[in-house]
Length: 325
Image (cartoon, rainbow, N blue to C red):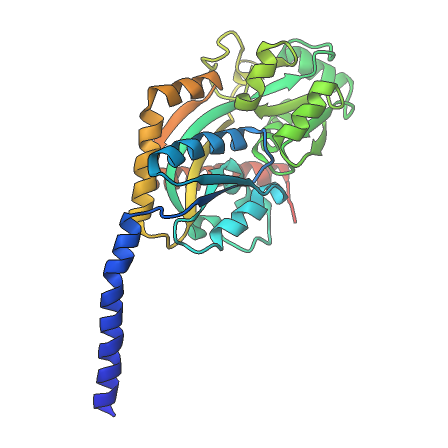
């Protein structure tokens, strides 16, 4: 019996040992087929724009197609759940955003624990949102907007990229700090909300500068301020909300993640290529056009950002008593 067990164990060990070179070769040659990059919001918003920029770069550099797939809904949880439960083989990736840090507290019944179920790969970019209004609204500054909102409580409709999305949270933070009351309507992504803002169906948004700057420069939207603590180089004459509401600071960020258990050589390959992208002058210029800045972070540093931001927004959510099912 002992001899038979030894033979079986030895056979299993030999099989595992024989498989190691194959696994190593597969990881070394990664990717050998197309890679799916899941995005939790609709096409047209800043998350989608960021995903398509890095997907184009990785497709060229790694000689395989990195295909962006938008799976919007549930504050990006649909895409996130699909990603964290995918095979950890490097062929399903996630465009990680602040939503993932926010949702950890906002939703009580998630089928995953993001901090434990995702493998951080790299930071991509950071960008503020804009407090922007339809030009028909009779305000041109943050103080005028606050005064108008207080004179018309609950009458102005504020569109967001979805309930619990970063723009929604930025708005909630603003309302909490200024005492204004806006009628918040969640969309299935920033793109659809922007369409209604442009047409005048809604009056105001907190939306990423990356998807809004073109409309602002064309005069189709009126930006009142940026949400970051300081002004943005892409719109240097535009004040920060913090200049009128001391302490206000809400900057969006984007990064790349994979299911937990994804082999380290694959994580390292992707992290290295992202770092090369963020150092590329053309990519930097493209980010600058969008009002964004490269956010070069390796797996460890990006993981720390996710954890720190989870803690930050948990405090805001608890203070505002916001909850999603």
